[in-house]
Amino acid sequence: MSTASALSVAILMTVSACGDDASGGAAEAPAATVAGVTIAKDAALHAALPEEIRESGVVRVATDVPYAPFEMFVTEGKPELTGLDYDLGQALGAKLGVKFAFTPQKFDGIVPAIQAGKFDAAMSAMTDNKERQAVVDFVDYSVSGSGIMVVKGNPEKITTLDDLCGRKAAVQAATNQLDLLQEHQAKCKAAGKAEIDIQTFPKDSDAQLALRSDKVVAQVQTKPAAGWTAKTADSGNAFEVVDDPAAAGGYGASPNGIAVSKKLPQLSDAIQKALQTLIDDGTVTKIFDKYGVASIAVKEATKNAAVD
Image 1 (cartoon, helix red, strand yellow):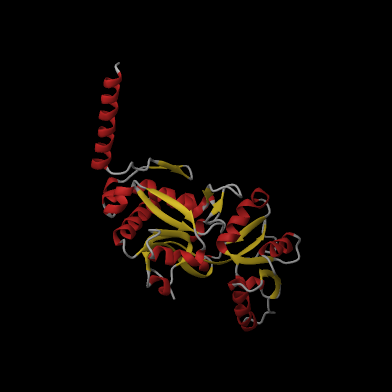
Image 2: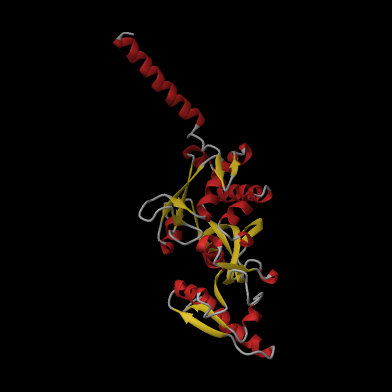
């Protein structure tokens, strides 16, 4: 082939490539396998996305890393992410036919960054509350509060907070979980029982050590943290989580949501519909179960369901 002919072919190929991009937009996100489930694009949901998202092929997502089990680094010091929020984002992206591109962002700067247009959304275990609803919309995907973790086998037969009355329970200082135990003291008294012997520790890991060494009968922490610890500590052989049927998502549970820019109502609608599809086909349960927190997954994808 002559140099002139080669140049002509190269130009033709470049023009053809540009033509494809102009007519078809950005390359679509391929099908993804998340928690053992292969998820493919839903054409109708893709068509419902805002035009700018369809053209870019990307939803820009802010997340504060690490916060196990929602967002974590695969390897400390390296950028690759994992975690419940990350996996759910990949599943939603595959269903919508776009990429959910996660970028670490300090938690207190997430909402301002969305307002400034730096991000389209955030997935960072963010509590849906009315104050935040003033500036972002939420698609709620979990409901979580405080949970009780006990040693494997639950030898003390702890089933509810009431069972902690008159017993030693570990909790990290200055947390909502400490407030929960302190507030429960009145119920212990009303039931004619002794108060909970609350053992406070500066770090969650210290409270966990107290439980491991039988200095307390239980540890109270956020239910997601309890579930992840029970799933991973000693390969799942050290602890288990008490599931109180009266508080499936945990005590004092509140909704967590995907925060979406109010400038992109079509995006929040599309995410809500995609999430419901993933709930209905069981994908969401498998993702949450992977991280030991199946009990906090919602059965219905709601919007702006704050309880405050």
